[in-house]
Structure formats: C-alpha cells, structure tokens
Amino acid sequence: MGRRRTRRGLIGKVAILLALGAGAVSAGAVAWAWETAIPPQPRPAADGFAPELVAEGARLAAVGNCIACHTVPGGRSFAGGLALPTPFGTIHSTNITPDEETGIGRWSEAAFTRAMRRGVDREGRHLYPAFPYDHYTRVGDADNRALYAYLMTRSPVRAEAPANDLPFPLNIRMAVAGWKLLYFREGAFTPDPAKPEVWNRGAYLAEGLGHCGACHSPRNALGAVDEDRAWAGGEAEGWTAYPINEHSPAPVPWTADSLTFYLRHGWHPAHGVSRGPMAEVTGNLAGLPDADVAAIAAYVADRMGPPSAERQRRGEDLQALVPRLTAEAGTPPGSSLSAADSLNRPPAAGSEGAPSRADERGEAIYRTTCATCHESGRPLPFGGLPFALSTAVNASTPQNIVNVTLFGLPPGDGTVSAVMPAFGGALSDADMVALLRFLRGRFSEQPPWDGLERLVADTRSGAHHVAVRPADGIERAPRNVGATD
Image (cartoon, rainbow, N blue to C red; front, side, top):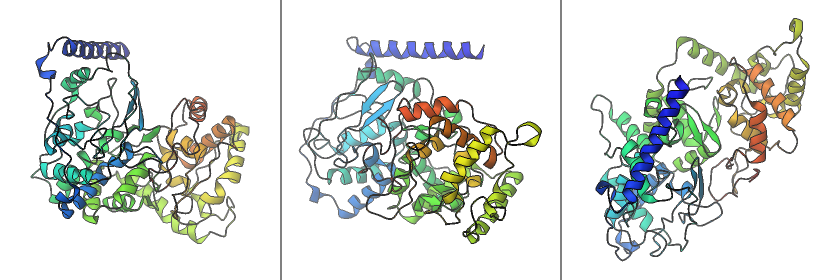
C-alpha cells in the first residue's frame, strides 16, 4: 500500500509539473510564470569596486563553493561548462565571468540579485535548481553586492556552455515554473532571537550560501530537498553525503570543536580526511575567517544534537586507543600486541566459531593492502585512519568506501597532501566484496551491507558516475582521476 501511495503521489506530481509547464508554454496562459528581461548594461569597470568589497565577495564565493560547479577541471575559473549529471538528464553550468557575450558582463547588480533571490536570469528565463537558488534566496543584499563585485572583477572568458541534455518538457525553461510553484519558497534569512549570534551566523552561512542541505539531504522524485528529512543524508557526484543531524553514523560523535578543525583543515584525527565533493568544500573554506568557520561548526553541531550516553562512551573509548596506536607504530600490523587490533570486533564466524573461507579471504586482502597504512600508527593526515573510527565503514551505504578503494585519493596539485593509492587495478570485484565485508564485520557493529556485488560492478564500470577529487579539492585536477567515464 505504501508503494502504491508513493507511485500515485509521484504520478500526480509529474502530471502537475507537466500541466504547469505546458500551460506556461501555451501563449502565456499562466501569467505568474512569465518574467521580464532586465535590460543589459555595459560591463562595469573592475576598478570601480572597492577592494574591501571584492575581498568580502571572494570569501563569500568560497562559502558558496561557486568555483567548483562553474569551472571545468583544467579550464578557466568560473567559465562554466561543467557537466552536472541529474536523474533527469545533464545540465551544464553557466559562464559567470564578466564576458559580455557568453558570461554575465552585461548583467546589472539587480539582475544578479534576482538570479540569486528568485532563480531567474537577466533575460527572464527560469534557472534550473541545479543552481541552488532555493538556498541562495536567503542571502542578504549586502552579501549579494559583494559577490557581484567579486565576479565582475574576475578575468572575462569567452566560453559558451554546451547545451543541456534534458527531455521534453524539462528542456523548456517555463516548465521550471511548475517546479518552483511546488517547492521554491523565496525569502531572506530571518535570525532566531532565541539563539546566540554565533548560531545565527552559522545558520545564515550553512543554510544560505553554504547550501549544506543541498547535498546532505535526501531529494524527492522531482529533485526537491525533502524538507521533512533535511540534513538526513543525500548524494553528490556519486558520493554519499552523510547525515549531519542526529543520525550521523560517525563512530566518534562530532563536536563544534572537531567540526571547526575539520572544516578548516580538511581532516580530523578522529574522523579522517575529506574526499570527493567534500574536499572541494574544505579546500574553499580554507580562506574563510576563523570566526565564520567556527560559526558554521557551531550551527551544524547544534543540529546534530548531543549524543546518547552510550554513543559518547563508545566514542571516548575509541579515541583513547588512538594515542596507543600511534605509540605502537613499530608493531607489526595485525600482531597480538597492536592497539589497532583491540579496536577490532571479533571476526565474523563460520560454523562452530571458525572464520569462514570468505572471511579469511577478506582478512588476507586487508592485511596486504590496507593494514600497512591503517595500522601503521602514522598520524593523520598522512597516515591511515583506524577503520574502527571510519564513518565510511559504519555508514548505511558502502558507496564512499567503494569509491575510495577503487579510485584512491589522488595527491594535491603541487603540494604536500594526504594520498591513498587506487586499488581498482589490483583487486577484482570479488576481492573488493570480500574486503568490504571483512571491514564491515571486523570494525563495525552495524549489520552487513546488501548489494555489494552490484554496487562494486556499477561503480567500476562507470554506470554509477563518480567524480574523484584530490585531497585538497582543487578544481584544476584532471576530471575523474582514476575513474572510468
């Protein structure tokens, strides 16, 4: 019955969207869907913007991670053209350099603010919500002015974005008006007077420009954030964006302090190294003032809430073993004296408590490919995180650990950074499945993962598209390093 209701609801919503889109296209039958063009203007002179305003815009653009979506790896910054796969087709990001022909060089500040606030471009076309204006609508006028100043002082690049690949009627911009009617609520951020200033600053940044919920929330069948499950986990570029509310799967509970450290440095000794799209986020936040990073962390920690007494105790026990592990760096991995082994759960047993042949295979692969780093005692970010502390091993889906095992963690471009080799060329699908089952059974109290075989095969083949980023998240890295397109 539940599935039938879901199916009927989906059919109903699709019908509404199609009807609204068709109505909007038919000779202006839906007046509210029509938006007028804002006249073009000559490109403003770069030296007409105050340097301090441009600097503030640079910091805000880092919060919004603007460069990540509007830059093709290896290409010119903000020149657009990046392919953004969605369940409905592929959208290409636009050129937001001040080029007058292919970028936003002829946009006024009012046109820019309308795009941020209402998701409508200068010519009056509805923007696809791949541009997260459902979050950017909360950005204040002063910050939009600073962002405009920053973008208008970038180097203009003549670059036409490829055409989007979307089915009818989604390829008609007016159809987006139907989606907006259902899911978009325009409105600036309103501070909560009952909360402290640091909380409100964090909420403004995280819910607005930071658009954390865009990745860390599940979406419904029409691609809108499920507001009833906001921050309960989502998906981004082939990676799982973990729940960052009370359902966080991190073995060691996050705190405001640990979140601040992680967001500032891109790693934390009890939580590991950021990777995938999150590496871009932490890489961009590196230029943010400490106060703003701490504010975001304070807000996220509050949304997570305090852990249960049992979870707190378990986390403290795990953390207490990490210094012992570091001190025993010279102990052979897997020996009976290794503190890492005391983090392990008993191996899954076959008949009469003996390990099964599959368990033995997984453990053998672990000892030869993983333990030399993850039990070395070398501290993060250059050593391997003990798997008992790994969110990836404890998560409800194995997607992230499949990704990082297959494709590794490429080094940063020209800088010292965390790195992990890709094992996709050394391990077969069967090897991968045996290893991951061993990791889950040995280092987690969670139930076994289902569907590992299919997930590994789809990820390796490229059927499940994965964007692989270097440890520092810099967008100039080659597209999909180590992945199969």
